[in-house]
Length: 214
Image: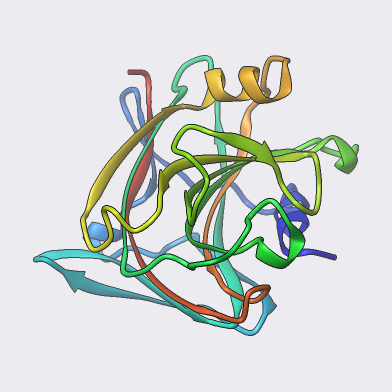
C-alpha cells in the first residue's frame, strides 16, 4: 500500500485536541509538545525532532531516501472552524522531479488533512497542502497514487527557501473546489517530509498548526 493511502486508515484512533474558544490547536510545537502525535513509516524513516530555528522552537524534519510522517487524530467541524493555519520553512527543494508521477511523488514539506469515510474506507479523502518542487502556486492535481487525495501547491520552488512562512487556507472551500461536494468532519492531520521515490534528501521545519473560525 502506498504512503498516501496509509493516512486513510486512522479512523479508530483516540481523539486528542486542544480547544480554546473558536481555535482548535492541532500542533503546539512551539511549546515543546508532541503529545498525541504518532509515527507512520513507509520506506525508511524521516527524522523528526523539536529544535530551535531563528530563535523559535519548531519540529525539524530530515529525510534521505525515506518516507515517514507524523499524524494526529482529531475531530474538527469545518462548519465552525474551517480555516487551517500553519507555519513552515524548508532548507531545499527536490530539483528535477515531477510530482504528478509516482516516481516524483516526494515533497520537502506537506500538511495532510484527512476526511475519513468511516466503514466505507474507499470514500476517505485527503487534501495535501504541499511545498511543490515545480508546480505553480495555487495549482492542484490528483495524487499520483489515488484520486481520493488531491494536492495543492501552497508554495513552489526555491525562491523562499530558508524563510519562515505563515500559511492560511480555507479547508472547507478547498474541499468544495477539489471534490465538488460538502466535506464532513476532519478526522486527522498529518505532516510529512518524504524523499523515498526520488532517492533525494530534504530538510524542513514545521511550526504550530491550528483551525479557527476566521
